[in-house]
Length: 239
Image 1 (cartoon, one colour):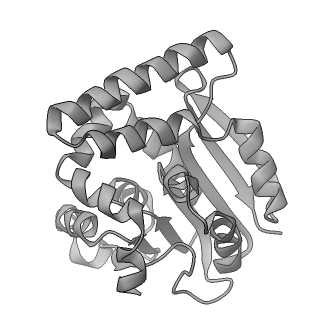
Image 2 (tube, helix red, strand yellow):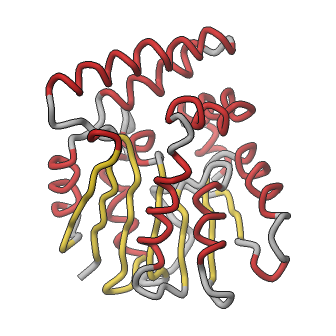
Image 3 (cartoon, one colour):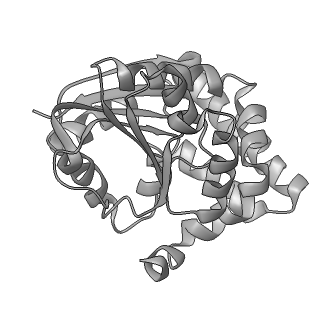
């Protein structure tokens, strides 16, 4: 498994940016990313979930939001393919009582190490576009989420989106290609930050992501938008 994960080009990118990842999120979103994660965590727990997975948890911001708002008996996992990011997540989790700390594991989103129908909800924040962007395993990720969700369970996706307004979308893409790429030059990782900008500007529109979720077997798909449509929160349920 480790060899497979190491072979993914995206693994190198996130290893490169891991020292600055949290700061990147704060700068790029003007600190609003934490507010959006709170909305995502609330949606993950809305159905009284007893088992929750943060898929592509990175440094653990969403995992900790879910944990902080969940009842004490909730079982929470954070999964990511990047061990450097997971170490940062584990370090953050030491601020919680030991009995409430989530379990962090290295794993591949295309082959989740959990049995069928295991989770009541899966949350993922700013991860899907990196999984789906120029990745030959794209078609496996959503069906794999569906497999490990229990009937009636929810997949909650917080992700960059495409504003409906052509004018706002133009300015949004301009921002991505100037601000984000500029950060790459500042920190000496231009290729890694170019990936972040490109994957966001080319990601699905909200309607396209709804269709993708439906085609993968999810029902009652809904979404809401933040920041003039630059961010979307999609929810799909397993029948």
